Figure 1 (spheres, rainbow, N blue to C red):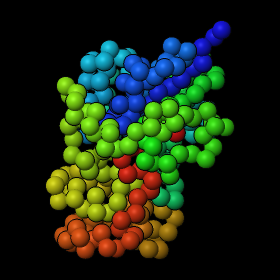
Figure 2 (figure 1 turned 90 degrees about the vertical axis):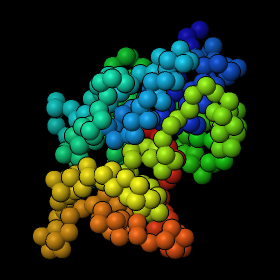
Figure 3 (figure 1 turned 45 degrees about the vertical axis):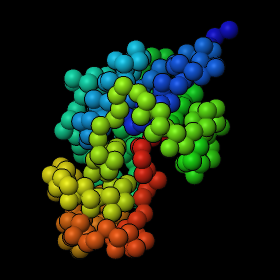
Figure 4 (figure 1 turned 180 degrees about the horizontal axis):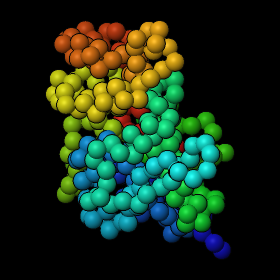
Length: 280
């Protein structure tokens, strides 16, 4: 009987890293699946994330496929074509992300298309390339993140191993990594794209205080592509950040005491992506 096909998505964080290890080494059903592991790079991940993904592959002997998505130049409309890269050749200057923005504009909370195009559609294009027409997708969401589980996961053949088959929480994941010979070595605020608009304003303000150069690329994208139909009336370009807050607004917020900042509800909001940016 032909094995079922499974894509294990690796976001580059500790939770999905543990999921990857568990599914290849301890999952009781592991031999009944044809498995591939995929990491999608937007070009704006922290360097430590890229190193961690490469280290997991080397330490565990798991072939992790590195993909980047770029707009297709064939046909009308918008579609994504995958590019296979590696740790050494992966984008560090946001090239995949900028190519997307150049085509579709600035993503923001009302148009959150970046994860879908740079991750999900990139993976799907690769799967078409290798002839996978029907597959399941494993996503690294823990038992303490039930609110992040898709209501349509059964219909869309999505599984959550760390919430369904091997329930673990954040503390248990941390204890597991404490016993390993290596670990993810980045600041907790820097997970996902370092200046990601989905992060809360307290998080973004801490990043601004610690490393203001993080926002240079994001400002360049706003300056180059942040044109909205209302700009000629308002004089304001489209920004990534909630409420169309500018990077100067974030700089101003970074001067406010964190305790006071957290009292402002709108500044504590996230767009459902507090720890990892999932592909599906």
